[in-house]
Amino acid sequence: MREPTVASLMTREVITADVGSSFRDVVKLLEDNAISAVPVLDGGYPVGVVSEADLLPKEEFRGGTGDAPGVFAGRAVKHRWEQASGLTARDVMTAPVKTVSPDTTASAAARELASEGLRRLFVMDSDGALVGVLSRRDLLKLFLREDDELRTQIREEILGRMLWVDPDTIDVEVSDGVVTMEGPLERQSEVEIAEHLVRSLPGVVDVHNRLQAGWNDTSHPRQTEIFG
Image (cartoon, rainbow, N blue to C red; front, side):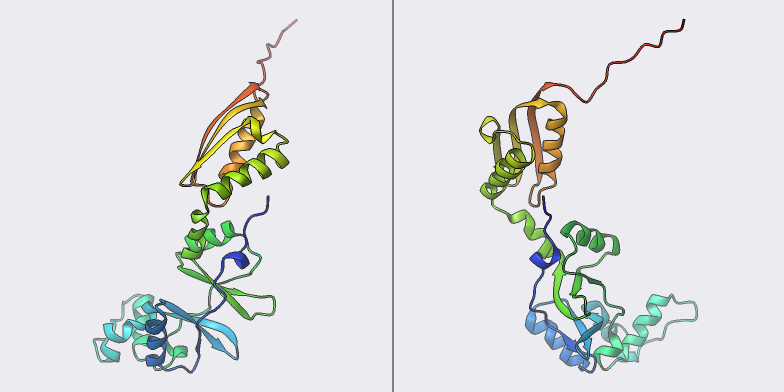
């Protein structure tokens, strides 16, 4: 069962800035396109990203006229202070840019976003060219799959082709992404495998597993050791 990749979910038309783009031009890009960040390109290749957070120090420190950070200020504060006097995208960008390849799986990309606390990943091909952007929202769209589409995939792909079970012997219902399965299977291991496979389907919110096994092949009778 193939998992969706970044290429199938990413936004292909990416708004970008050049390293020499002025501070005001970057602000205008964000405002006009209702986005919160843009990748910064140098010769067509991404070298950093400017987000709203990278632009706010200009106001925080009043363009460098506010109080400078003290000797014991943290690295993050000192970095914002430097950004406050920035004039171009190169001056204020955060580098390096966080990237992902188009063939990365959706779950791996979600893990990267979560572990790094990121809002987006920029997608680069094998030549280092920018080909798209993947946001948290792009990944969450997986949960908007139609219930009928999920039900068909469960019946035909998981039950029919993977478990070799007649789909008509199992009742599969899907409501708002929540799957309920009820019916007989030959072995307990098949019951567990069926639930695992269904839970891993993109778009499934939860699984109510009411499948019944004819016999339990997952437990072994306790063996009594006999000493002679």
